[in-house]
Image (cartoon, rainbow, N blue to C red; front, side, top):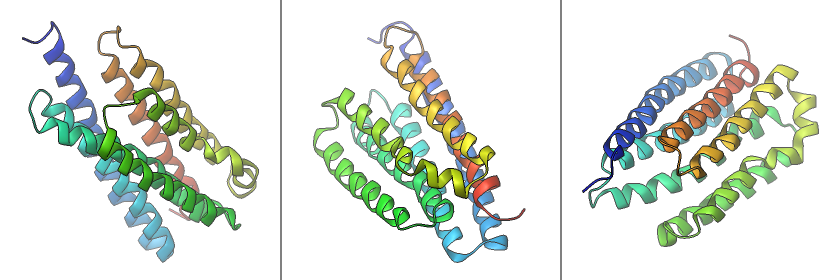
Length: 213
């Protein structure tokens, strides 16, 4: 027997990130198109990684919430949690390869993708344990940009940095609602903040990291 409002919340959770999935597919196509016509091979690769990681995250989240209450949801829950690590590293890939010019770019990418591999393994083994700790790790990984903020400020326009920071604020502040379990539709509200973070970073990459129009 489901608690009152449970099915409505599942519907909101599924639809919200289903919309995020469709927007991610559109964003992936737009970024690849622009990078292939005005950029370099590394631009195409970096935005492909970013767009694919974003699309996969929204797809796994949508499938997990759509099948919640069924046995297969357990598998999609693991994929959902793993894909968050993938999104963080994927979001940083164009930032490092297109926004940084120093050796820090490859060092930061190495650290982030190394943590992502560890995170994938951890979530495969202990997906239901230490949820708060995993949220803090997501948060710490997401804000690693502060280590190279001065270089980003010098290589990007102030507007580009604004959208980078805004995305981080969306993702971070959304965790408040993720943790606010007594609030009705708290998870769906968190999903909207995640979409806001993804859109901000897409906007930054498309208009401020990719050359030309």
